[in-house]
Length: 84
Image 1 (cartoon, one colour):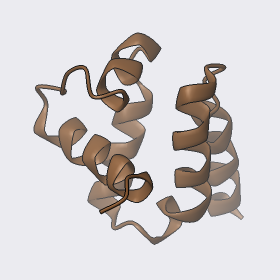
Image 2: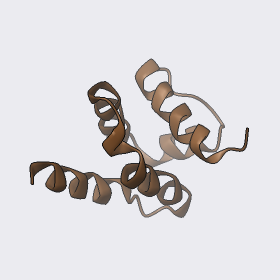
Image 3: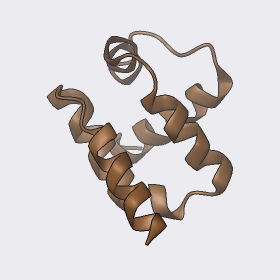
Image 4: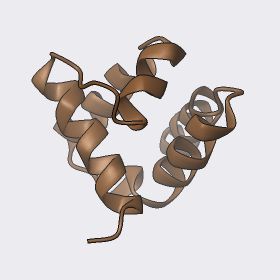
């Protein structure tokens, strides 16, 4: 039950009110987050603490986070949606 509460909380934190972010983060938290290891789950929670404008710039590939943990998570999310 605690896992369901945590996932629900993360779902709502992933909804940023900016369509470009919502279409990346909401499916990721629903489909991928539960299968991540504990370290990557922590990285995702750390990513959610970032400002929307920073997230937008990173996901639109106008820059990259300096923090290697955040960079790993941004790349993981982008790799899911970009054609190879």
